[in-house]
Image (cartoon, rainbow, N blue to C red; front, top):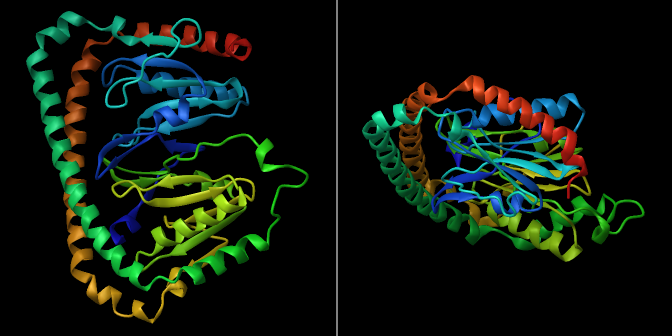
Length: 365
């Protein structure tokens, strides 16, 4: 997957994505990530202050020394989709499409944050034709993007089938066992059953309007970072064996799938502070060449799959161009909502909301 070697690392602390653009279309992780939390669900249009509100809540949490997880949009990767405050068991979410969310227990536990009350609805109504056309244009280009992603994913399957024919599971299993035999089989004096749950899937990379991007959150956190060198696209096979081993041992782990293919890009073992990654890595602790796990049948794979690889890369370039066009259309759509929004009112409401969250949430169920 040489196109994804160009993943650009975005500057942010404790940051993730909560969804992915994939060959199957838009895939949301909102339910699995945020269902344990009390939620504040924000409703509003593009450019009407949802992301800014969440950024202010995150900044306040950090000022108070509270752990804060930022979840960014998988398309507009500079915009927040959610902020989670684990110590308060609370998450603030963008509940608008395509990841539509409604409060599960409105009023009793969860809260609806309606920013539409700050709109000049007469202005939006006067521009309804332009707004409708922009929404339709964005939806049409997304259809093109997902069709192209489907084609690229099929080509990736062809490349990985060639690696599968030469992949030696026994060699992979031996390497994996050695990694964990060097470490404690359990954290000192603790049973895995008593450890807190983690999100089984938490994306760390995205393919959005600014191209392929990633966060290095886990790379910074892990004591040991294993960078997988994967010239022949054998990493899905290696990760499958790694997950099989961890499941047998009863170990906790968190998977970060890649956009487009949804195959594993990173796997984090919190109990060992150990990360395996195929994503670009500045300072790996260990470099593991997956060629070691191929038999002699692996010779010539690059030559045999050259055409499929080249076509996949060319399609990914087309996808990047179409996503960039979506970004421009989205920026134009935002101008209407920016013009229609009373931001002084939104700011005042945000301050009231921050006061409510940080004075009351710690005592809420």
